[in-house]
Length: 485
Ligand SMILES: *Cc1c(COP(=O)(O)O)cnc(C)c1O
Image (cartoon, rainbow, N blue to C red):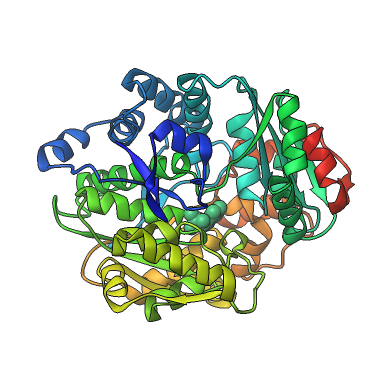
């Protein structure tokens, strides 16, 4: 399987090269040249596979330059003990509504599915391509990505990682998840300011030719753990298949009949993986893109105009607070099949903050996607309703999708992707349930356990006593020096 840029079909790469580079040389994203078709026989065989084995089969269809035995080992290491046997767990919310709980991994958010595997793919790509430099991963994070990347890259050979998070922008639990990270090759910095300050500082380092030259002289090359990397997208296709099989097994859907899915969306990576699964032959119905008040994507799917010139809202679902949704570029390419047109739209977005696709492209997108959005109050009301009526406890991101799913439920059974543990956001979840949250996240977590009878994931509860390795904070101006350390 070969890949090429969304903006120029002549810029091709193997899977290993695409994973090593992240972005194509022209700034486009790598897309597969064709999609593997999965027939009924294969689907029937895959139903019986455990999560790691299923992952190895699907990865092998896309990562054809990797040894299948390596992929089996990597998938077993990524999705075995680290997920405590709960990789791809599907829970019933109520009749016709199911939740795919993607937060049973080491950092309690769905990004573990990509970031437990992609680092192994990167190390292997370097070996296959005979690269000997040290890879330095720089991450600016508002929370979930930073911890998931730290956990994925810690102590891997030939790689080090520096994470920058806003000192006033994460929950106490998210901060401690990062500040207590173990590993010899990790560094974590709190940056005085908000997420933009951290992100702008890191982007500057990536664009700084002098910094690159200085690092090159020391045998270090920069890379990012961003969700535009194909190595982050491909592992996410797996759980759609796994979830469909589990729903069929419990009689929630008749084999071969469609399931609608609803995904809390930010950078459009998670839901796009569902589209790939559908195009490969999995019987999925509508893909519902659920946005929070930063509803640039649901406006786009409704109107065909992507307009990023709007107010940015800080919401209770911070991992969806995004105005430039990078992975949408891949869907644009697949919907129109024309790299020149995609390059044109992205150029307009860069210059004017806005573009409008043609009618055929919009129709192709709307053949698979529907959309909706919910503000914090609507999501909180849904969170409370699902707990009180169904005994199902969701986090604030998942609550956005539950709200959209409730409004748009059709005849087909609905699967909502549950993307974070409610215990990661205990104060907001308590408030949604009508309780007055205590100031400390840990007190709030204990109160949430008492009120709901749930048990906090041990990795979160253990943070209270874990030694802090990275204390203090730096000015945004010091990000460059930290990145070059
Ligand atoms: C990252 C994230 C999302 C959004 O996923 P995208 O792939 O960026 O659309 C939703 N919920 C949680 C908890 C996340 O961490």
